[in-house]
Image (cartoon, rainbow, N blue to C red; front, side):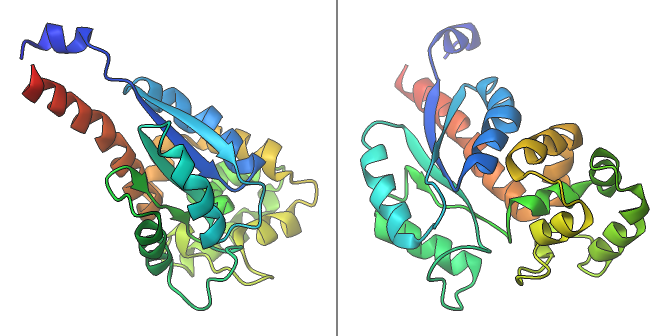
Length: 218
């Protein structure tokens, strides 16, 4: 198909993202949406209001699949209800099996929680929260987890958000989370967080798949 004709056709895909709460909703709106809209993918975050479980995701995902081209999730492994010792990949696979729509549903659980992404740039994290004196400690946390923000552990005392809150008591998840992530930038977050990057790659493939289908059917 002629490239000019392909560009003239509408390939916009509408994707519902079931998010855990306000922090993830603002992250989608402020950081992901501007990047994806340029790829003809419209991201619509839908808050689940916390207390995330397999049952709540399945219950809310099924009706959304009737009105959106795709449905995905963005919730934390740390607070996931009823994980019962399962690994994060096992949870994602089980959710997709229960939704029973593998082509249009992409399960993603953030390891271990949203705040892990903010460790992608220790300098920006420390500077933004006025805690430059903590920079060596932040870097040490990363070093002890193979410089992978997503590997920072999820105990009640050492989860990423608990560490940040201990360093900066005024930290507000919804307000500061989006602003810090925006300053770090999506490109750097993707480079530092492999599981997150894999999810973004899966979402990006939605647009390529639609464009390919249009080309075949022209």
